[in-house]
Length: 381
Image (cartoon, rainbow, N blue to C red; front, side, top):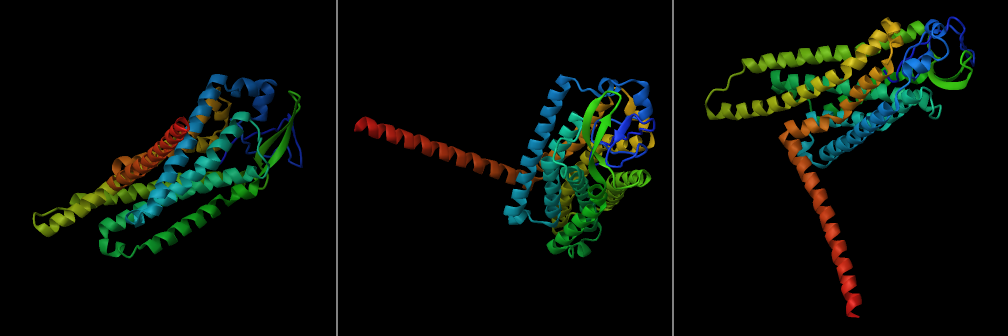
């Protein structure tokens, strides 16, 4: 899901929805919990604040954690893109997909993490109105690109292991075409967010608060919107992970059946298989990390549609922040996984870091020598 989904059923007329939105409309609001009109009326005007107020120390901690994830995600994945783009030996088919994964993670770090966090924390939409549709759309696109790319990598590795001769036909040009298809399909799957979400001003008559802007679904019927959200969870999580698990299971079975005789030619082949195994192990860790990070958040998204009362639980907002942060943090782990499990990436990381440090040291030394020369000249004359 692109934003924290808050379903509000104001059947008792506790709120006035402006711009022609009637009280039976099911809203997707970028705040931190689902509140029904019945629960709201029953618990009095301070229900919202008593249930969903975030303590100041938690706000400070969350702000630090979200900021750290965003910074590390952008820095680490930009470094991955730099390595793949600047080194010809790193421009393999698998690494092109890895670079595509890094692009999606950079987008999440730039657009999804900071903007969604502030919307959920402030419990209103405080950004320019056009970003109401833009931010959720971009996040859904990025998550789709990530999981579709992981699926493409799994299929490419499967072909490389089970049909190495056929896999040779998967050239860089074919990989680039697949990347284009991944982006186009991701844009299409996410399009309902861009079409349906708009800012609506809501007036709370019970507490007498002024109008508050919320980013809500106004372009689709409630049932259609709920069906789309169910389909989205399946399309961007459960179905791709099912395909990935099946594919890597077949790869594991194929590798177990392989044997390496002792002559020179098969020893060379065994080294090739060993290198492929390292790549597969690295990508399996990437997939497992993705699955574990997104499991709580996607499970919540599914439960919130099936059982909305879950959002009336006390401190559900704090729990939601933890689940959302865990999902967003997935965007910063991959560069560390590459550095640990890929010898080539590790060597490139070290080379880039040493180059940057060396250049910084040379610049500092040059500045120091210039200052010393100027001081010596002034003392002499």
